[in-house]
Length: 287
Image (cartoon, rainbow, N blue to C red; front, side, top):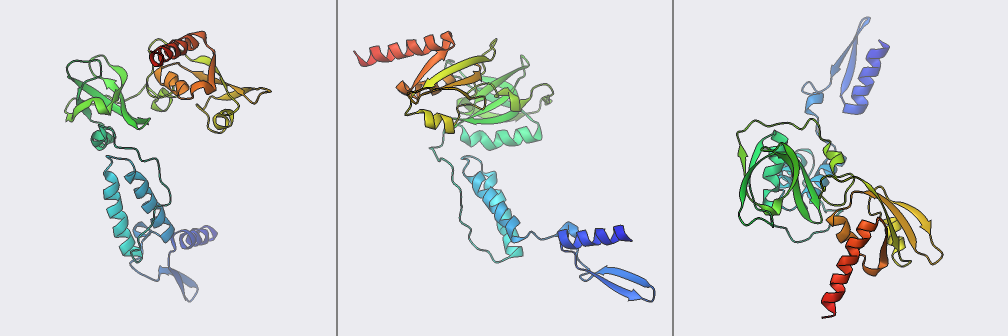
């Protein structure tokens, strides 16, 4: 009896169940005051509707992702059913850069990943003179620097690769049997790099960068990477940070974006690469 009372109390407090009781002699009967009530057909409360609406607005900011329109229609229907339809204002906005080429393919690829379908992609990288048809088993969509990339397995070699959506000319679902990802942790694939380029036959290196006093507060409050550690606070206000990363082109581009406010201390190979770039820039502007 005590367990039954607790269950009914939970149904009333959590689900708002209209439970009533009636005593007939020594027996007590419990019933729904509204005979049509069911916890399987619960209306959403106002807070839940607001959260759904905000989720739809957030998705709408992903260019090329029209599923947000369908979600918004569903939310509007729920609002009309549960409360007066009031126009809600968005309370959060992300950076809204011009749409990059390839975003129109975003939703088709997303649906293929969810439904575990192989994609036939007509792809032309920047260093190819002609496009090629590739069969890709899609696993993950990744956004970086306002561009979208697909992480998937190339059917011919059974190797994992990253493919830019802006280099895809066409994307079609193929009837080939889908090979599920059973070995690659897609959440960890980009863990040790900046961006999306994972160089082959490379390993994580300890990278040390010195930032000027004027730039150090920004780097301290907005880390370059989750592995970032401040290993030195210098007397002149500059700091030295340490990163555990696999060096790639995106890392070099990021370091260059800080201009003269950063200096590579370690490793020497990264220092030499950036020194060569700096010399080429100097030569170009001194012509």
